[in-house]
Length: 134
Image 1 (cartoon, rainbow, N blue to C red):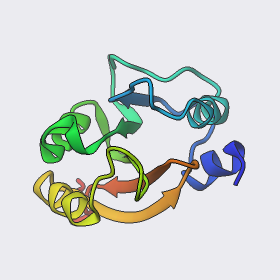
Image 2: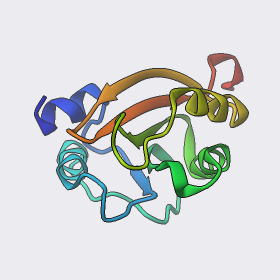
Image 3: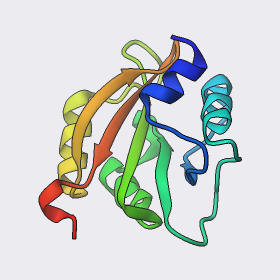
Image 4: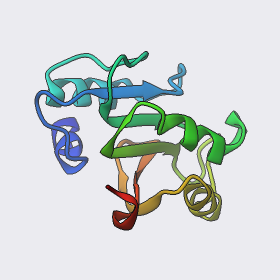
């Protein structure tokens, strides 16, 4: 999949406000560029208003994933999406699917899909359950 196709599959559109958390030198720059191209803007690091989505780069040794997900919700709009980006199986920092499911539940989120977004990263779409939205 090309970067543009990945950004489309992830649902990014022009004008969306996307916050990025957990960036480090191992983050996939082509994916970041594709998201910025799709939203036609830069990624936000310190939000001053609610954002439409959060890109959360996470590796096994980054700490407590549930806490990271709760932090990702701080600036997220009520109907926003958290895209949890984790290394693929076999990559350094891989996060087990069971750990993701447990952390999402603890943070009050539901995992809806997983997308392979680059040769070394996968993206897990997390949303607030529909019954929790008001």
